[in-house]
Structures are given as C-alpha cells and as structure tokens.
Image 1 (cartoon, helix red, strand yellow):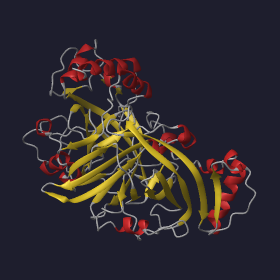
Image 2 (cartoon, one colour; image 1 turned 135 degrees about the vertical axis):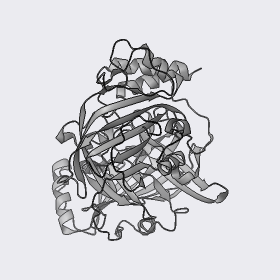
Image 3 (cartoon, one colour; image 1 turned 120 degrees about the vertical axis):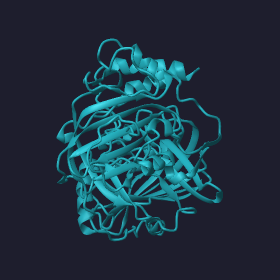
Image 4 (spheres, one colour; image 1 turned 180 degrees about the horizontal axis):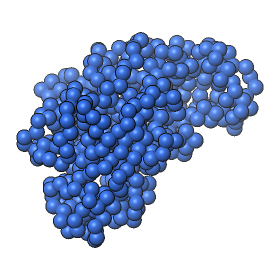
Length: 505
C-alpha cells in the first residue's frame, strides 16, 4: 500500500548531487496549482481548493540559512515513537548558544507531567542540506543536560532506568535537579542521558518558514522545523535527520488563539506546562481529509495527501501527489489507491490511539512529468501496466499487473495502522495516522505498527456516501503511507538515476 524510497536510493541522490546547494537567499512559494490533475468537473471543490491553497493560502517565505534566534514552542501535545508524550520550549541566542526544555508526560493530553530535561549547548547553521531539499544542515554541541522529575512515581521509574544504564546510585527526589551529563566533567564519561534514549540529533537539520496572508504582509507567523527523531529509540543517537518533527511556533508571532503556545512559553524547568483539559474524541473516519501543508518524508519525498472514508461501508480511497520540491509546486507522479479497512480497536500500546488493518486491492498511477512517463516506459514486461503505454497526465490501472514494480508497489498489500483525532487551535477537526518507520520498511506485521503519528490531515467534507471507484475525472491521487514495500530495489535506483538526467537539463 505504500511506496518507499530506501536509504540506498537516497545515497544515489546524494552522490549524484540532486539536492543542490543553494546560496543564502529567500525562497518564496505560491499556492499549489493542481487544476489539471484534479479535473474540471470535480464534486469535491472544497477539498481541491484546500490542497491548492496549502497553509490556508498563506504566502510562504523560507530563509536560507535561517536566523533561528528567539524562543520557539510547541503548539500541541506531541507524540514520539515509544510512545513518548512531550512539549518543547527552545531558546536560541544570537551568539549561537541555546537552552532547550523538553517536558515529558504520562498521558496523551500532556496534563500529567513526568519529568523535564534542560539541555544547553551551541548550534551553528551551515549550508543547504544535501539530504532534504529546502533544509539547512547544522552542527551542534551539548554542554549540559539537567533532569527534574515531577512526582514520586516518575522519580522511581527514572531511578530504575538510570541505575541500569549508567550505575546512578544517587537518590532522585521530585522537584530537585540532577546533572545527567556535562561537558568536561566526570559525568561526561558515563552518560546518564543515554538511559532515557535522549538525543539532540534534531538540531542537525533546520528549516524556518515565515508566512503571511496575501495582501497583508504585516500579518506574519514564523515556524521552525527541526529534524525528525528516529522511530527506533535505540537508533536515535546515530540518526541523521531526513525529515522534520512538528514545527515549533515563534513566541513573537504565534496566533492569539494558540492557548497551548502561551502556556508552554510561561513554563520553566521546575514548573512544567499543563495543557487544557479535553475530552477524548471518538474516532470518526467518515468523510474527506486533506494535507494542511506540503509534507516531507524521509528519503527525499515531498507530497500531499487526500483520504476518503465511506460512511456506508469500510471502503477507503487514498490519493497521493508526489513532488520534486519542498513547497509542492512541481508534481512528478500520483497514486490513486482503493481498498478496505477493519473495524477500529482501541490501542493498548498508545494512549488515545485506535488500531486498524488496511488492505489495498486496486491502484492507478499517473505520471505528472515527462521524466516519470519516460522512465515507466523503459521497463519491459507486464510489471507495471502495459509496456510502453505511459503518457504524461494519463492515468493507468496497474491492478491487472499486481502493482508497479518500477515504483516498488505490489498488490494486494496489507498494513497495520494507528489513528487518532484532534483539533487545531481554531477548533477544526484533524486526523492523524501512523508515522512511517524511519528505515523505510512497511508496517506489514502487527508488531511493526506505529506508535507515533504523521502530520495531521484536516477535514474538508464531513461525510461521503457510496464508493465512486478510483481514477475517474476529478479524483484526487494519494496514499495512506509514504511508500510501498520495494520489490526490486535496483529498479528504484535506475529511476533515480534517469530522473537526475532529466532534472539537470
């Protein structure tokens, strides 16, 4: 059900120099234009409009290299794999030093603080990323890590972890700070922060976006994207980011409706933020859901998504647009999938999550640029539609060939999913589904099910009755995950290499 760009393919991209180094400059974007690929007579005009006007139609400006000086805070209770529930408050100073606060919780609404980490160090933005187009690479160095627990139960759990990982014998008491690591001290040789799977590798990749409404340049909002955290906790310290976490909001410019931002901005090491109380929202998939922004996935993938869940059946449709750029203006290909899903079961592993099993049985592919169409025509046999028949903008059903080997797609395909619902600061419904494994694999077995989430989708139509099939004029093109299990990896390498030739023209 999902197409993945494996790490080896990413290395091919790097060695060929596809992610060009950009000089320091401003990179501006305008709303995505997808009229042709959506079709003229679509009944889902609202969804189409929202995908064409990502970020609610805001004008986006990216600074490279970014000036990240200032304070930045989370706008929601975040979920990392494990799961871990946390909020963040980072302060970057003009002399390149920083002080970061990570607040950890026992619950999925971030109302029961467990412990807080205070991290001090320095960070130096360097050059445009060779891994993630539109991002900036950075070097960082830690100088100190402090820990404060906020309850006797949390202190006891931390005591056990730290005794096992670094032989810590000192008693941990709630409300008191303890040094887990300090540069140049005896403790630096026995890193107690390792026992918490702590890492700040996220500082190796930066992206800052400034957005404003069309015709109102004075209304600015700034967001800071830091590198993704590996979905396998044991790999966090070795991971070089190739995607992003949820963005942090600038304390100077966050929207007045963001109560969470205000609460977090007023917190400190000894007084963690307690977010507003909220009821657990029942999961209702029915309807249409679309991306709020151009999304980035590990493996140099840029995409937008649109899900359709039918009210009178357990049938879903997924349509994904893939792009070659970080603002989703230049489409490369789209995938339109259809299948069925199981009844949801409350997750016992992730508080607030619901588990599903999704199966893909039908799929169509549309090449959206000449390079992709030409590449698909290179492959012989019946492994990806009819040989030599691919044309620009013309959709082709790959169900009869059991998928498309050139794109690493094999049908039928089953994946084990995790969903939850939420609301943004404006009260709009959001839908989260499971984060893809950092290593590019597929959650095709129950034990591989995600314990964290991808960027949320926003509801554009509340209900959808009756399956209309896929691939008709006006359909969106999206998929649930960000990759299918690759069958013939060398085929992917060929695609990447050939596309490099076209992109360099």
